[in-house]
Image 1 (cartoon, rainbow, N blue to C red):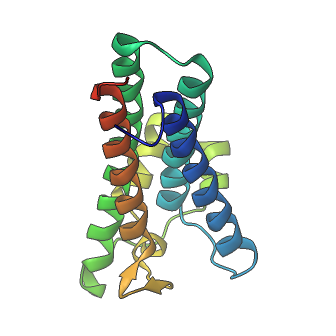
Image 2: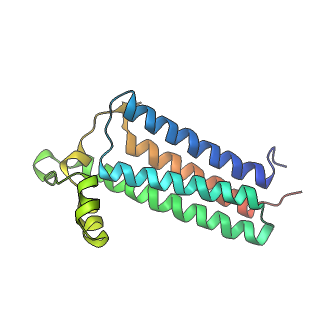
Length: 164
């Protein structure tokens, strides 16, 4: 027996995402850590997970539909985690193999088609490989990936558990 109902656990996931976004904004505006394009996409992943979890909590789907909602949340968490993994890969590259810095995300959004923008962002840039924040020896993308893995596991558990 779980201490949370299915609906409550979806609300917990949504609240965790809100807290993660609050910390991201704190890190940006108080700590002065400007997000790179990959960081922005990770934030989008966290927000999508949070919005899907909130919608699932509001709708309060029955068992079959709870599985569908849980899979949608897991898919969003996987996408955000993949971006985190890519950034971690870029951060471990030797300095001479890091791609050159490109224009900022704002400029690219205004001037490039979406396919070109995504291609440039995921090829990475020097700013995405820079590590300027560590917690327990790990950079921010590691913690975002760990957080998204947690939300993925919670969502799948919530969709497949038996609720009394």
